[in-house]
Image: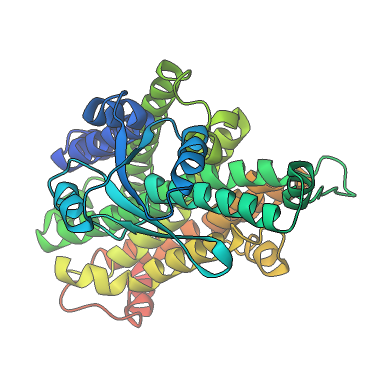
Length: 416
């Protein structure tokens, strides 16, 4: 048993000290910190007091004043400046950066506003959306005047309809809560997906590397192949859990440090303002179970090849299974209550991501995620038992071996 713990510790520490792990973790942690501080970073580059100035040529001599008031109410960081210069002269100033753009106002059909906005780019931004909304409101006011409507009647005409959703089931989430859950589930799903693929590939590659360098022949003389397999799986699983813990800690500290600046906008839309401990716990549980399921399969497949270059071909079906589960989860973000998504959440290879999606977005009965966890545990035990038999014989197979027919050969070697 001491050999098993030695192998486990070696698998864990060797990957923990690897440059690839350190660099990957650093980049991911940096990305989380940058996302949490994105507002401060933008302000540092642009400055809090930056004002976008737009030159206006008002051919009507009537619209500028009303439009200026509307723009100020919508966005105080945008100002309009009436100019008498020619269009070509102002366009030159726009190219030089003196103005953010040029707005030309005139009357179109029915004496309603007709506007042309000229800038260095056609991409939509806050300026164009603000100016468009302001002109729309000015047009509504003019149209109301032409139809002899009072401001109260115009406000009543444009008032949003009262529409409220109510669920018969007690505790069902509102649309706002679903949108918030969708954001955080989306991000955690990406982490589970990429982590499972990365660490499962790592196991398969390491097994193939040991076989190609003949190190495996030395190892099996002192440690049984089955102990090696589980030591690698558990050791690298601890590496993944360590990375997840570091990233969650960085994310938590970044959010707590900038909590006052992160209220509203992107932060709330993506659900970080309502992040619960239960979601984090479920993310860790399904990450670990998904990892052990696919890691066992990867170790099994990696033991069948003798050359590193054959690894990707051998584990390609496993990669497709992970991708299919991820795509089902992405589909489920829009339709989490779909029967298709519900059924897929109980298929072992898809459960880690799809069941986590349902737990994160829906108030499902506790027995459903528990059933999913039980299905995963049973599947891992069955796959581990089968994989151990193949691994024991597969590590002794050399030569060109990249076909699933070699599974039978590995089982026959185990029997001998």
